[in-house]
Amino acid sequence: MGKRELSPINAGSMADIAFLLLIFFLITTTMDVDTGLQRRLPRLPDEDQQEDTSDKIKERNVFVVLINKDDELLVENKPMDLYQLRQKAREFIANPNNAENLPEKETKELPFFGSVFITKNPVISLRNDRGTSYGMYIRVQNELVAAKQELRDEISIQQFGAKFDDLTEDQMDAVKNYYPSVLSEAEPKNIGGK
View (cartoon, rainbow, N blue to C red):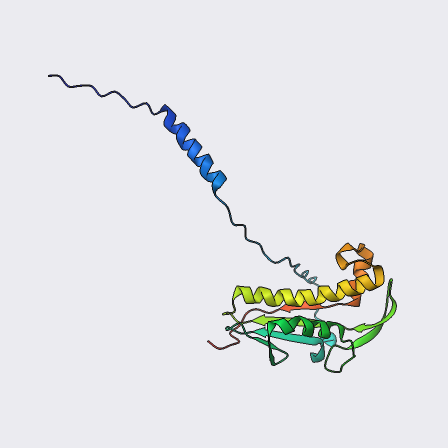
């Protein structure tokens, strides 16, 4: 008996099948796209610009928000729940009753508004612990940004009959000057212990 010769396997269609499988997996696989915060970083100061020490920010013009490793808030050295933060931030930015423990107010001439009595340089300082959860950090930031946005929407509707995002660029600039505020984020530290 003789040896039987093996016939070669036709592999011509294997490449087609592999290509079809590759296309199938590419089409059916979902890709998670990371979304970030829409924040604009401050411009770098000019090299020849020197630090002006005469214009230090007064303590009453700074709203301090701390988040510890257990996701607990300390606002202006007092414990606070997240649901109270937006209202406190609104009160700080606007200082409606010209309280002495809230930002200073000044009379300023603004386009579209005329002479107005508004807060002078309110700064919201946010600092978190290295152990703070990302979710809590984002929720706190959202509340602080929403406080400013609500105030700007209210004055925009009152003055122009439209929300802030629907205004012209000149109108937006006037509203930004009406409710100025800066969100300052410090580098995380171990606020709540180890």
